[in-house]
Amino acid sequence: MVETKSKIEGRPHHSVISAFEAMETAAQGHTPSWLQALRKGGISHFAELGFPTTNHEEWRFTNVAPIARMPFKLADGCGLKVKEKDLARLQFPEVPGKRVVFIDGKFSKELSAKDLAPAQGVKVLSLEEAARTTLPLLSQSIARYARYDENAFVALNTAFAGDGAVVLASPRQVQREPIYILYISTAREDAATNPRTLIIAQRDSDVKVIEHFVTIGEATAFTNAVTEIVLEEGARVEHCKVQEESLKSLHVATIQTHQAGNSHLLSHSISIGGQIVRNNINCVLDGERIECTLNGLYVGRDNQLVDHHTAIFHNKPNCNSHEYYHGILDGRSQGVFNGKIFVRPEAQKTDAKQTNRNLLLSDEATIDTKPQLEIFADDVKCTHGATVGQLDPESIFYLRARGIKLEIARKMLLHAFASEIVNRITIPEIREKLDQQLFDLYEK
Image (cartoon, rainbow, N blue to C red; front, side):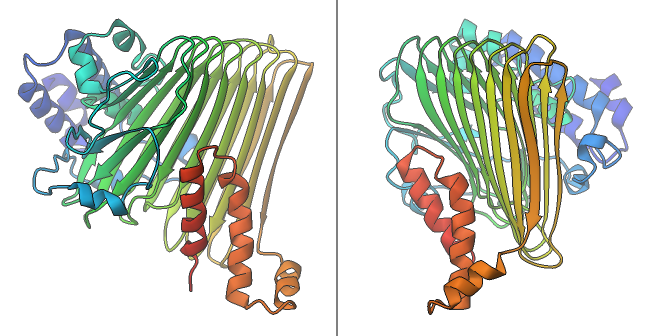
């Protein structure tokens, strides 16, 4: 590690190497060899890549300098005890199914469901436990899909992969109730967590997974999350990621999906909190008759920056993909949407649609939107579009004319705009709670 360290000594992120070496020393003899090799590969690639800058085309509108400048320190949560009663204000209430809780990236047995044994063939366990049990499917799947040789944040997460959630749905098993994964950052000091989630839906299985990110402290928490979702032949997955961390939080997430033939993915990305938020969502459609739907809603206030970068790769014929992203931006907030659809030459009969709609509620709010198509097949139906505007004055006048106050009329229109995305979530408890939260968000 000395040689690697020398390459980046003196740069803003040299403390990452020191933290890695300390972690490796502490984990000596307790880490499976395959995971140890994976971590070393991650730190090696991070040392080569470094944190991206605005000189990189993919990061042109998202300046992560505040992350790079932070002295890299792993959060441990040792000084702040989270109790069951604290969850009442953090979690989505009354969500059925199994709850899995992580505090500062570490599995909390006390706050998680008491019985995480397989139910109807769906296994839920922590990454740390899964690594100890040496599940072949785990070592074969983790980091296979999320490329850590190309993305510095994925490389960073891989280097510090220690804990997270593993959801394994057995063949032909249907999990009616969702798996609820709650990631809590205590933010008692400026520190980082690197949660890792792996979801494998085996042949003809059906599973719903919620990932919910929150903070309870006042310091600057940096969350660097990676989620890999694998859908085998005929599998169905609904994945709902809700990020509502504090406005001091820094959040970078990568969701990497891989679909086999006849599989169905329904994905929701809801971003409400965070000072700087970047969501990378990459989907590979690697079989025929695949359905892939990406829904997204981002809400910016004050000086927030919320960035969604999506990429859908149509590798095989007869597949459909649909993207619907809405943004609501107020204050001096900045939104970014960059959506790419790639259609390979052999991916004939592709049907791909991409839509990005944005509302700017102040003169200082901005949005950079760039939907893109790269099509190398000739028998396809592909459309994309983006709109940027303000609340419709005629709609406000119509509501005012019926005796509705201006503030209420404004909230009603914002609520209707957001609900077009939220109502696509099929889990009632999540949908209803988000619906109320978004309605209350613009309370004057």
